[in-house]
Length: 141
Image (tube, rainbow, N blue to C red; front, side, top):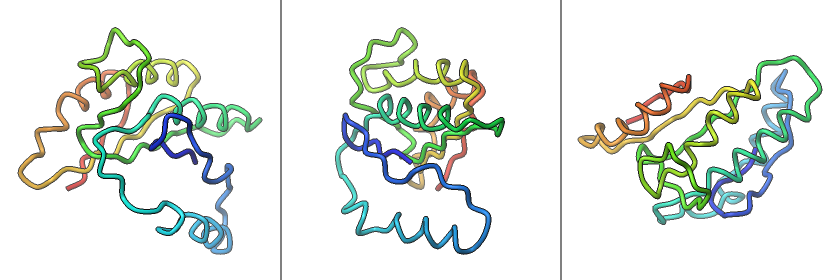
């Protein structure tokens, strides 16, 4: 599980098979509020290095299981990534080019976009692009 709040991703937890309550407790013990620290009020994250780290982790698992990357962020999904991307709707969505790359590696993406009540339309541009590339987009209010 990589974090995307810095240009260099930090691996939070190795791939972990969750088969019982003990496994769930292990994950819950690691992924606590004190581990993550305070919420970052900045408008951007760094999706590209987090996607790259997550895909390396998933591909290193020598198995035939389906592979997913779950993204949880605000509905605007702005990033500070600087990699050029012809598909980007603006300078804050350069990470869009990572989606087809993940797709080519048989890694599916599920996107949870958190919205503020009354601003549900903010997710539309991101949702439109992602759904064209097979990404499951779920809006959370």
